[in-house]
Length: 236
Image 1 (cartoon, rainbow, N blue to C red):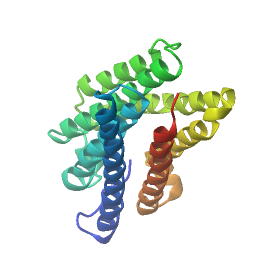
Image 2: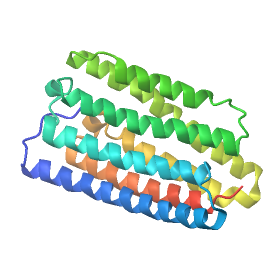
Image 3: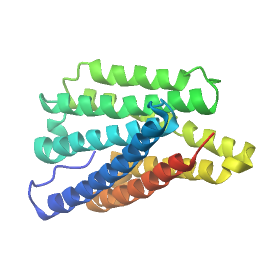
Image 4: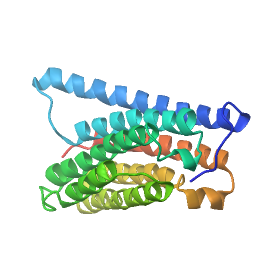
């Protein structure tokens, strides 16, 4: 975890601008995807629970969750680990976790169902949801318990690595889908590398909270751009 930051100080302001930029980018990507889904609905008369919809839900959920995390980090705790587990701070954090992780589970389920023809039987989606529910309902009453629950969530994040592997596999097997499959895979990888940068140990290695957040925001924007564009072009 990053250390406490003086609220409204220079470092705090730079971090806030970085996060707001990321949120605006996510919102624009989400609106663009929503417009494409709406246009398709006008043609077919229905909204399909397909890969594009899963990406839309993922982008929207992460946008909402990022706003909640921003409020938690900047206005409720100022990055002070001693305040993370206190109520109502922990409630906001858990709700953000629930929203973000649920969208990852849905993405996994749709990829399994639509791309792999349910060969994985939804197992990864179920694992992520079980981990998420443990995080949400585990009674956190100390900083150590918060660290435990937060670390548990990293298991779900690491499982995301199988999504780009699936698309690399699809691209390898289907030359017609190769370009878009690889674009989706690379986009997901870049996005989640951007998220992992904010892990406390990695921030310590970088040596600067501001630099870590700046790098994270840039990587997430690039990753989401590739992910969203690839999902629009990806047609089975």
